[in-house]
Image (cartoon, rainbow, N blue to C red; front, side, top):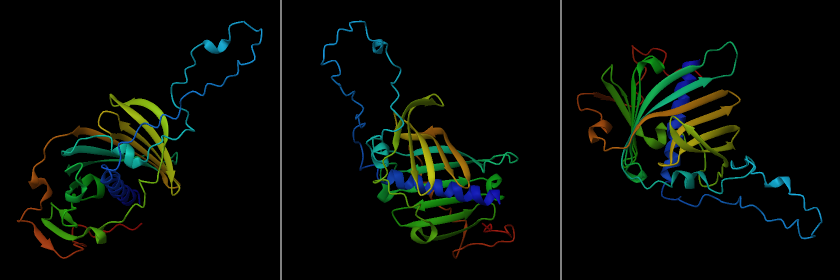
Length: 270
């Protein structure tokens, strides 16, 4: 079922991003300038061929070769920005199995993060509109207390559980993965560094905003298809604490707080 896959994809992406930014304090290394041209002294034997060598025409090889690694781990790449405040953005996800007869599925979610560079006291909020899964959902993650909240605003119901029970680790060791640097590209008007790596059968290409060390676009390809994520309407500004709190008027039920009459088929079958 396409909707179940795209919901799971969106959750995995948010959790993966959380792991990446958790190590924001670990990075900040250099740009891996291992591409210094080796001065091969091929002209040591003064051959009489004084005809100007055609190699003096400036070769357009300013984009690093796709076979050279960046020299930085993913933690390094996401750790270059010194920004420590809050951030809010829209995450536009397009999912496709690659079948010619299939129309790609697209959804937009809003992500809010309290304390961008403070993972020990992080607060995350993920707003999933009704168009995504057939009903509106809000996930709130409080890393200080180790608690995750699932909130169904249309039904005025919520429940909570520990982060260790409610989430799955995407299993990416961001201190180990050293992606390949593919050069720079401008995406959505922002100059980005482009990286690519393959982990556990999935190839990921990322466009990282140079000024902010923040993802602008991400593309993952695996045997199940291709998912493209675009980060839009990015705002770096202070966010209200109320965004990351379930209102007291909401009925708090034991976890898991489904099934409900309005959601007879949840959770979706895989």
